[in-house]
Length: 426
Ligand SMILES: [Zn+2]
Image (cartoon, rainbow, N blue to C red; front, side):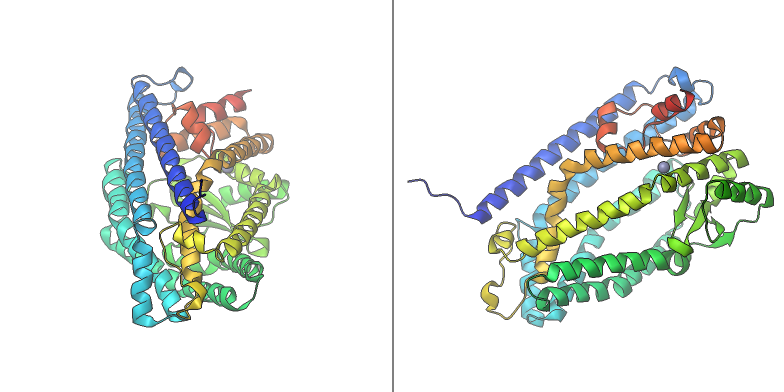
Protein backbone atom coordinates (compact mmCIF):
# COMPACT_ATOMS: atom_id res chain seq x y z
CA UNK A 1 0.00 0.00 0.00
CA UNK A 2 1.27 3.46 -0.88
CA UNK A 3 1.39 5.81 2.05
CA UNK A 4 1.72 9.42 1.01
CA UNK A 5 4.51 11.21 2.87
CA UNK A 6 3.70 13.84 5.45
CA UNK A 7 3.39 17.44 4.21
CA UNK A 8 6.49 18.37 6.19
CA UNK A 9 8.54 15.88 4.17
CA UNK A 10 7.21 17.41 0.96
CA UNK A 11 8.30 20.84 2.14
CA UNK A 12 11.78 19.55 3.04
CA UNK A 13 12.07 17.99 -0.40
CA UNK A 14 10.79 21.07 -2.26
CA UNK A 15 13.06 23.38 -0.26
CA UNK A 16 16.14 21.20 -0.84
CA UNK A 17 15.35 20.81 -4.53
CA UNK A 18 14.80 24.56 -5.05
CA UNK A 19 18.03 25.31 -3.21
CA UNK A 20 20.01 22.80 -5.31
CA UNK A 21 18.56 24.00 -8.61
CA UNK A 22 19.09 27.68 -7.81
CA UNK A 23 22.67 26.94 -6.72
CA UNK A 24 23.40 25.08 -9.95
CA UNK A 25 21.88 27.86 -12.08
CA UNK A 26 23.84 30.55 -10.22
CA UNK A 27 27.14 28.68 -10.45
CA UNK A 28 26.57 28.05 -14.13
CA UNK A 29 25.71 31.70 -14.84
CA UNK A 30 28.71 32.97 -12.88
CA UNK A 31 31.15 30.68 -14.70
CA UNK A 32 29.63 31.81 -18.02
CA UNK A 33 30.13 35.45 -17.03
CA UNK A 34 33.73 34.87 -15.93
CA UNK A 35 34.56 32.97 -19.12
CA UNK A 36 32.90 35.54 -21.39
CA UNK A 37 34.63 38.52 -19.77
CA UNK A 38 38.01 36.74 -19.77
CA UNK A 39 37.66 35.83 -23.47
CA UNK A 40 37.02 39.48 -24.40
CA UNK A 41 39.73 40.88 -22.15
CA UNK A 42 42.36 41.35 -24.88
CA UNK A 43 40.49 43.83 -27.11
CA UNK A 44 38.27 46.84 -26.51
CA UNK A 45 34.99 46.36 -28.43
CA UNK A 46 35.26 48.43 -31.67
CA UNK A 47 32.33 50.70 -30.74
CA UNK A 48 34.27 51.89 -27.66
CA UNK A 49 37.85 51.88 -28.93
CA UNK A 50 37.93 55.67 -29.36
CA UNK A 51 36.94 56.41 -25.75
CA UNK A 52 38.08 53.45 -23.66
CA UNK A 53 41.74 52.52 -23.39
CA UNK A 54 42.87 48.90 -23.30
CA UNK A 55 44.12 49.42 -19.74
CA UNK A 56 40.69 50.67 -18.59
CA UNK A 57 38.98 47.80 -20.41
CA UNK A 58 41.23 45.25 -18.73
CA UNK A 59 40.75 46.82 -15.33
CA UNK A 60 36.97 46.48 -15.81
CA UNK A 61 37.41 42.83 -16.86
CA UNK A 62 39.56 42.03 -13.83
CA UNK A 63 37.23 43.85 -11.46
CA UNK A 64 34.19 42.01 -12.86
CA UNK A 65 35.88 38.61 -12.67
CA UNK A 66 37.10 39.23 -9.12
CA UNK A 67 33.65 40.32 -7.97
CA UNK A 68 31.91 37.41 -9.69
CA UNK A 69 34.35 34.90 -8.12
CA UNK A 70 33.78 36.48 -4.73
CA UNK A 71 30.04 36.19 -5.37
CA UNK A 72 30.50 32.44 -5.75
CA UNK A 73 32.22 32.25 -2.39
CA UNK A 74 29.40 34.27 -0.81
CA UNK A 75 26.86 31.98 -2.45
CA UNK A 76 28.51 28.81 -1.15
CA UNK A 77 28.84 30.20 2.35
CA UNK A 78 25.31 31.66 2.30
CA UNK A 79 23.81 28.32 1.31
CA UNK A 80 25.73 26.47 4.02
CA UNK A 81 24.53 28.99 6.59
CA UNK A 82 20.94 28.69 5.32
CA UNK A 83 21.06 24.90 5.70
CA UNK A 84 22.63 25.26 9.13
CA UNK A 85 19.81 27.54 10.29
CA UNK A 86 17.02 25.38 8.87
CA UNK A 87 17.39 21.65 8.16
CA UNK A 88 20.47 21.21 10.36
CA UNK A 89 18.61 22.67 13.33
CA UNK A 90 20.39 25.97 14.11
CA UNK A 91 17.25 28.02 14.48
CA UNK A 92 15.60 25.27 16.50
CA UNK A 93 18.53 25.13 18.92
CA UNK A 94 18.56 28.91 19.33
CA UNK A 95 14.80 28.90 19.95
CA UNK A 96 14.92 26.07 22.50
CA UNK A 97 17.86 27.66 24.31
CA UNK A 98 16.07 31.00 24.57
CA UNK A 99 12.84 29.28 25.70
CA UNK A 100 14.69 27.65 28.59
CA UNK A 101 16.32 30.90 29.51
CA UNK A 102 13.48 33.41 29.06
CA UNK A 103 10.31 31.29 28.97
CA UNK A 104 7.77 31.77 26.18
CA UNK A 105 6.84 35.42 25.90
CA UNK A 106 7.48 38.61 24.00
CA UNK A 107 10.99 38.93 25.46
CA UNK A 108 11.95 35.49 24.17
CA UNK A 109 10.56 36.24 20.72
CA UNK A 110 12.39 39.55 20.43
CA UNK A 111 15.55 37.87 21.70
CA UNK A 112 15.17 35.22 19.00
CA UNK A 113 14.92 37.87 16.26
CA UNK A 114 17.80 39.90 17.70
CA UNK A 115 19.95 36.80 18.25
CA UNK A 116 19.36 35.67 14.69
CA UNK A 117 20.26 39.12 13.32
CA UNK A 118 23.38 39.27 15.51
CA UNK A 119 24.68 35.83 14.52
CA UNK A 120 23.95 36.41 10.80
CA UNK A 121 25.68 39.78 10.99
CA UNK A 122 28.76 38.25 12.64
CA UNK A 123 28.97 35.55 9.97
CA UNK A 124 28.79 38.18 7.21
CA UNK A 125 31.37 40.43 8.84
CA UNK A 126 34.55 38.84 7.40
CA UNK A 127 33.00 38.89 3.92
CA UNK A 128 32.11 42.58 4.00
CA UNK A 129 35.54 43.38 5.43
CA UNK A 130 37.22 41.45 2.63
CA UNK A 131 35.05 43.08 -0.01
CA UNK A 132 35.78 46.61 1.19
CA UNK A 133 39.38 46.40 2.30
CA UNK A 134 40.71 43.86 -0.17
CA UNK A 135 38.68 43.90 -3.40
CA UNK A 136 37.54 47.53 -3.51
CA UNK A 137 40.93 48.59 -2.21
CA UNK A 138 42.84 46.62 -4.86
CA UNK A 139 40.93 48.41 -7.65
CA UNK A 140 41.34 51.81 -6.04
CA UNK A 141 37.68 52.31 -5.09
CA UNK A 142 37.78 52.06 -1.33
CA UNK A 143 38.21 55.35 0.52
CA UNK A 144 37.09 54.06 3.91
CA UNK A 145 39.34 53.78 6.93
CA UNK A 146 38.86 50.95 9.41
CA UNK A 147 37.80 53.57 11.93
CA UNK A 148 35.02 54.91 9.66
CA UNK A 149 33.95 51.35 8.88
CA UNK A 150 33.62 50.57 12.60
CA UNK A 151 31.73 53.82 13.23
CA UNK A 152 29.32 52.92 10.41
CA UNK A 153 28.84 49.44 11.84
CA UNK A 154 28.10 50.82 15.30
CA UNK A 155 25.67 53.42 13.96
CA UNK A 156 23.76 51.01 11.74
CA UNK A 157 23.52 48.43 14.54
CA UNK A 158 22.11 51.03 16.92
CA UNK A 159 19.79 52.22 14.17
CA UNK A 160 18.62 48.64 13.61
CA UNK A 161 17.83 48.30 17.31
CA UNK A 162 16.06 51.65 17.67
CA UNK A 163 13.98 51.24 14.50
CA UNK A 164 13.81 47.47 14.14
CA UNK A 165 12.83 46.36 17.64
CA UNK A 166 9.65 48.48 17.97
CA UNK A 167 8.28 47.43 14.56
CA UNK A 168 9.19 43.79 15.29
CA UNK A 169 7.41 44.02 18.64
CA UNK A 170 4.35 45.56 16.97
CA UNK A 171 4.16 42.80 14.35
CA UNK A 172 4.66 40.05 16.92
CA UNK A 173 1.96 41.60 19.08
CA UNK A 174 -0.45 41.72 16.11
CA UNK A 175 0.37 38.09 15.27
CA UNK A 176 -0.49 37.08 18.81
CA UNK A 177 -3.60 39.14 19.43
CA UNK A 178 -5.22 40.53 16.26
CA UNK A 179 -7.08 37.32 15.45
CA UNK A 180 -7.40 35.45 12.19
CA UNK A 181 -6.67 38.43 9.96
CA UNK A 182 -3.61 39.58 11.87
CA UNK A 183 -1.59 39.48 8.65
CA UNK A 184 -3.74 42.24 7.14
CA UNK A 185 -3.05 44.48 10.13
CA UNK A 186 0.63 43.52 10.09
CA UNK A 187 0.85 44.36 6.40
CA UNK A 188 -0.78 47.75 6.99
CA UNK A 189 1.64 48.52 9.83
CA UNK A 190 4.62 47.36 7.79
CA UNK A 191 3.63 49.59 4.86
CA UNK A 192 2.99 52.57 7.13
CA UNK A 193 6.37 51.98 8.73
CA UNK A 194 8.07 51.91 5.32
CA UNK A 195 6.41 55.16 4.24
CA UNK A 196 7.49 56.76 7.50
CA UNK A 197 11.08 55.63 6.90
CA UNK A 198 11.00 57.12 3.39
CA UNK A 199 9.75 60.36 4.87
CA UNK A 200 12.37 60.65 7.64
CA UNK A 201 15.30 59.08 5.75
CA UNK A 202 16.62 62.23 3.99
CA UNK A 203 16.39 64.52 7.01
CA UNK A 204 17.11 62.21 9.96
CA UNK A 205 18.87 59.03 8.87
CA UNK A 206 21.10 59.85 5.89
CA UNK A 207 22.79 62.82 7.69
CA UNK A 208 24.02 60.38 10.38
CA UNK A 209 26.27 58.80 7.77
CA UNK A 210 27.05 61.60 5.31
CA UNK A 211 27.31 65.36 5.08
CA UNK A 212 24.81 67.08 2.79
CA UNK A 213 25.53 70.56 1.52
CA UNK A 214 23.33 72.67 -0.73
CA UNK A 215 24.68 72.69 -4.28
CA UNK A 216 26.65 75.94 -4.53
CA UNK A 217 27.80 75.80 -8.16
CA UNK A 218 25.53 78.63 -9.42
CA UNK A 219 25.72 77.85 -13.14
CA UNK A 220 25.00 74.15 -12.59
CA UNK A 221 22.20 75.10 -10.21
CA UNK A 222 20.58 77.35 -12.84
CA UNK A 223 20.87 74.61 -15.43
CA UNK A 224 19.43 71.91 -13.21
CA UNK A 225 16.60 74.14 -11.94
CA UNK A 226 15.66 75.03 -15.53
CA UNK A 227 15.62 71.33 -16.43
CA UNK A 228 13.37 70.49 -13.50
CA UNK A 229 10.97 73.30 -14.37
CA UNK A 230 10.87 72.14 -17.98
CA UNK A 231 10.02 68.64 -16.76
CA UNK A 232 7.42 69.88 -14.28
CA UNK A 233 9.27 68.52 -11.28
CA UNK A 234 9.33 70.16 -7.86
CA UNK A 235 12.03 69.27 -5.38
CA UNK A 236 12.78 70.89 -2.06
CA UNK A 237 16.47 71.23 -2.66
CA UNK A 238 19.63 70.26 -4.50
CA UNK A 239 22.30 68.70 -2.32
CA UNK A 240 25.85 67.46 -2.67
CA UNK A 241 26.78 64.42 -0.59
CA UNK A 242 30.33 63.54 0.45
CA UNK A 243 30.25 60.08 -1.17
CA UNK A 244 34.01 60.29 -1.67
CA UNK A 245 34.36 59.66 2.08
CA UNK A 246 33.63 55.97 1.46
CA UNK A 247 34.08 55.11 -2.19
CA UNK A 248 35.18 56.43 -5.56
CA UNK A 249 31.98 55.08 -7.19
CA UNK A 250 29.72 57.91 -8.38
CA UNK A 251 25.94 58.34 -8.27
CA UNK A 252 22.99 60.72 -8.16
CA UNK A 253 19.56 60.06 -6.73
CA UNK A 254 16.21 61.39 -5.60
CA UNK A 255 15.16 60.80 -2.07
CA UNK A 256 12.04 61.28 0.01
CA UNK A 257 8.61 61.74 -1.50
CA UNK A 258 5.87 64.35 -1.72
CA UNK A 259 7.02 67.67 -0.35
CA UNK A 260 10.23 66.30 1.16
CA UNK A 261 11.67 65.26 -2.22
CA UNK A 262 15.27 66.30 -2.81
CA UNK A 263 17.96 65.70 -5.38
CA UNK A 264 21.30 64.39 -4.15
CA UNK A 265 24.51 64.40 -6.19
CA UNK A 266 27.58 62.50 -5.02
CA UNK A 267 30.60 64.81 -4.95
CA UNK A 268 32.36 62.10 -6.97
CA UNK A 269 29.79 62.52 -9.76
CA UNK A 270 30.23 66.28 -9.94
CA UNK A 271 34.00 65.80 -10.14
CA UNK A 272 33.84 63.29 -12.98
CA UNK A 273 31.18 64.85 -15.21
CA UNK A 274 30.82 68.11 -17.16
CA UNK A 275 27.75 70.25 -16.28
CA UNK A 276 25.92 69.14 -19.45
CA UNK A 277 26.52 65.51 -18.53
CA UNK A 278 25.28 66.02 -14.96
CA UNK A 279 22.14 67.55 -16.47
CA UNK A 280 21.67 64.50 -18.72
CA UNK A 281 22.08 62.10 -15.78
CA UNK A 282 19.51 64.07 -13.80
CA UNK A 283 17.15 64.07 -16.81
CA UNK A 284 17.44 60.26 -16.85
CA UNK A 285 16.37 60.17 -13.19
CA UNK A 286 13.50 62.55 -13.97
CA UNK A 287 12.51 60.13 -16.72
CA UNK A 288 11.93 57.48 -14.06
CA UNK A 289 9.53 59.87 -12.34
CA UNK A 290 7.75 60.97 -15.51
CA UNK A 291 7.13 57.37 -16.51
CA UNK A 292 5.94 56.67 -12.96
CA UNK A 293 8.54 53.94 -12.51
CA UNK A 294 9.00 54.84 -8.87
CA UNK A 295 5.27 54.71 -8.23
CA UNK A 296 4.94 51.43 -10.12
CA UNK A 297 7.82 49.93 -8.18
CA UNK A 298 6.25 51.01 -4.90
CA UNK A 299 2.81 49.72 -5.90
CA UNK A 300 4.22 46.32 -6.86
CA UNK A 301 6.19 46.22 -3.62
CA UNK A 302 2.96 46.89 -1.69
CA UNK A 303 1.11 44.19 -3.63
CA UNK A 304 3.91 41.66 -3.25
CA UNK A 305 4.16 42.21 0.47
CA UNK A 306 0.40 41.77 0.81
CA UNK A 307 0.72 38.38 -0.89
CA UNK A 308 3.73 37.65 1.34
CA UNK A 309 1.87 38.49 4.56
CA UNK A 310 -1.20 36.48 3.47
CA UNK A 311 1.07 33.51 2.76
CA UNK A 312 2.80 33.95 6.10
CA UNK A 313 -0.61 34.16 7.78
CA UNK A 314 -1.50 30.76 6.38
CA UNK A 315 1.89 29.08 6.79
CA UNK A 316 2.37 30.19 10.39
CA UNK A 317 -0.67 28.10 11.36
CA UNK A 318 0.61 24.88 9.73
CA UNK A 319 2.80 22.64 11.86
CA UNK A 320 4.41 21.12 8.71
CA UNK A 321 5.78 24.55 7.83
CA UNK A 322 8.02 24.41 10.93
CA UNK A 323 8.77 20.70 10.89
CA UNK A 324 9.58 20.75 7.17
CA UNK A 325 12.24 23.40 7.73
CA UNK A 326 13.92 21.78 10.71
CA UNK A 327 12.11 23.43 13.62
CA UNK A 328 9.93 21.90 16.35
CA UNK A 329 6.96 24.22 16.87
CA UNK A 330 5.37 24.70 20.27
CA UNK A 331 2.29 22.72 19.30
CA UNK A 332 -1.02 23.50 20.97
CA UNK A 333 0.74 26.18 22.95
CA UNK A 334 1.75 23.50 25.44
CA UNK A 335 4.47 25.77 26.71
CA UNK A 336 2.26 28.79 26.36
CA UNK A 337 4.90 29.91 23.87
CA UNK A 338 3.92 31.44 20.53
CA UNK A 339 5.71 30.47 17.31
CA UNK A 340 5.40 33.88 15.70
CA UNK A 341 9.06 34.91 15.69
CA UNK A 342 9.98 31.45 14.41
CA UNK A 343 7.47 31.76 11.59
CA UNK A 344 8.82 35.18 10.61
CA UNK A 345 12.39 33.93 10.49
CA UNK A 346 11.62 30.72 8.60
CA UNK A 347 9.62 32.74 6.09
CA UNK A 348 12.44 35.23 5.55
CA UNK A 349 14.92 32.37 5.14
CA UNK A 350 12.86 30.15 2.83
CA UNK A 351 11.17 32.63 0.50
CA UNK A 352 14.31 33.83 -1.35
CA UNK A 353 15.13 30.22 -2.29
CA UNK A 354 11.88 30.06 -4.27
CA UNK A 355 11.62 33.69 -5.40
CA UNK A 356 15.05 33.44 -7.05
CA UNK A 357 13.28 31.99 -10.06
CA UNK A 358 11.25 35.17 -10.71
CA UNK A 359 14.32 37.41 -10.48
CA UNK A 360 14.85 37.48 -14.28
CA UNK A 361 11.29 38.80 -14.78
CA UNK A 362 11.93 41.70 -12.40
CA UNK A 363 15.31 42.41 -14.00
CA UNK A 364 13.63 42.49 -17.40
CA UNK A 365 11.15 45.15 -16.21
CA UNK A 366 13.95 47.16 -14.69
CA UNK A 367 15.98 47.16 -17.92
CA UNK A 368 12.91 48.26 -19.88
CA UNK A 369 12.48 51.17 -17.46
CA UNK A 370 16.12 52.18 -17.94
CA UNK A 371 15.63 52.40 -21.71
CA UNK A 372 12.52 54.54 -21.20
CA UNK A 373 14.38 56.88 -18.85
CA UNK A 374 17.24 57.15 -21.35
CA UNK A 375 14.79 58.09 -24.11
CA UNK A 376 13.23 60.72 -21.87
CA UNK A 377 16.65 62.18 -21.02
CA UNK A 378 17.58 62.42 -24.68
CA UNK A 379 14.33 64.24 -25.48
CA UNK A 380 14.90 66.72 -22.64
CA UNK A 381 18.64 67.28 -22.90
CA UNK A 382 21.23 65.98 -25.32
CA UNK A 383 21.85 62.42 -26.44
CA UNK A 384 25.52 63.19 -26.84
CA UNK A 385 25.88 64.38 -23.22
CA UNK A 386 24.03 61.35 -21.89
CA UNK A 387 26.22 58.99 -23.92
CA UNK A 388 29.37 60.76 -22.69
CA UNK A 389 28.16 60.64 -19.10
CA UNK A 390 27.35 56.93 -19.33
CA UNK A 391 30.72 56.15 -20.85
CA UNK A 392 32.52 58.03 -18.07
CA UNK A 393 30.45 56.35 -15.38
CA UNK A 394 30.94 52.87 -16.85
CA UNK A 395 34.65 53.57 -17.10
CA UNK A 396 35.06 55.07 -13.63
CA UNK A 397 33.04 52.28 -12.04
CA UNK A 398 35.00 49.68 -14.03
CA UNK A 399 31.79 48.07 -15.36
CA UNK A 400 32.55 45.52 -18.01
CA UNK A 401 31.58 46.36 -21.60
CA UNK A 402 31.41 42.68 -22.52
CA UNK A 403 29.12 40.83 -20.09
CA UNK A 404 27.71 37.39 -20.90
CA UNK A 405 24.29 37.96 -22.57
CA UNK A 406 22.53 35.28 -20.50
CA UNK A 407 24.02 36.60 -17.27
CA UNK A 408 22.68 40.03 -18.25
CA UNK A 409 19.19 38.60 -18.85
CA UNK A 410 19.16 37.03 -15.43
CA UNK A 411 20.74 39.63 -13.18
CA UNK A 412 21.30 43.03 -14.77
CA UNK A 413 18.94 45.74 -13.54
CA UNK A 414 20.55 48.13 -16.07
CA UNK A 415 21.17 47.23 -19.72
CA UNK A 416 24.87 46.89 -20.61
CA UNK A 417 26.59 50.01 -21.99
CA UNK A 418 26.71 48.65 -25.54
CA UNK A 419 22.91 48.25 -25.70
CA UNK A 420 22.18 51.62 -24.12
CA UNK A 421 24.56 53.48 -26.43
CA UNK A 422 23.28 51.64 -29.49
CA UNK A 423 19.73 52.74 -28.66
CA UNK A 424 20.86 56.32 -28.14
CA UNK A 425 22.59 56.39 -31.49
CA UNK A 426 19.46 55.04 -33.21
ZN1 LIG B 1 17.88 54.63 -14.29
